[in-house]
Length: 358
Ligand SMILES: Cc1ncc(COP(=O)(O)O)c(C=O)c1O
Image (cartoon, rainbow, N blue to C red):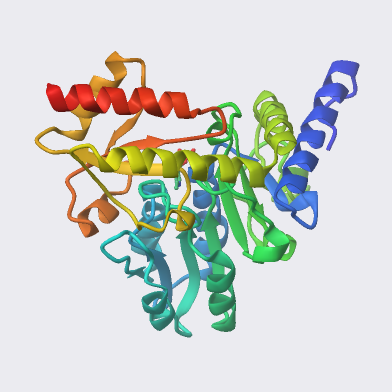
């Protein structure tokens, strides 16, 4: 898709398309036309809700999500259900925050049109067996949308192996810039879906028919049909660069590194007066440790760490239903990535000791 003919514009177009190729290769999409640049995971899920859901969901239908979802994979479906009149159902998670796959399977029926599930929980780091679940969902004739915000940056994700219908992820969680993310969708789905937003670039032709004064419109090809307006060209180029960087290290290496840091930190935290959450089997998890310190709010704990230059998250992490299910008001969350070291975890545990003294 060429925006203009002058050299700088052509260079920008080329870099933008190269970025798309890089993204498609990274998640092993069949075709780069299956990757749409969006603002992030949230926008990708809303795109599917409005471009696919608005026209394909109605009274009597069901959308199945889980209780471990980030709000961005619940609320678009909740909002749309008020317009289209379908039911939203929730697959259970157990006390450790692990998805109850049997419950999910029991809730699948001919009424289920789409299952929307996170690959990795942003609260507990629990990894869902997406390949198995996708098979169950497809056997029932439904589609599956996977929220990959916490999986694509941390573990190898192979779309041809997983066979999911939609995958959403964000650049800023994988060393890329903010304001750029990706919606992957199978080509035949994207081709059948209506545009999400109207504007420049997403249309090939808009003509006024003379006698009737009606507009004759031909939408652009995919993926451009879903990229209305001037795209975030810089963001896409930045994301591609981040992908090149993490690919060079290797996703398997990154996952191994995170697991070893999580094992190391979990062991040291066992000796401290903190309550941690999530399954004990760390191989079921990515590098996230949710915890609470007795007698202190998670925000106080996060502020304490901040005084020592250590950044942790606190609150409900946009996952209210999961906190409710785990009987928690809130939690603090230590999370690790490719750049973290064991020395930093030692420092983290030293600050935990300080908090205990305090
Ligand atoms: C699991 C999960 N899904 C969705 C999102 C939303 O991502 P974004 O804010 O980049 O759209 C996040 C962000 O924290 C997340 O962790």
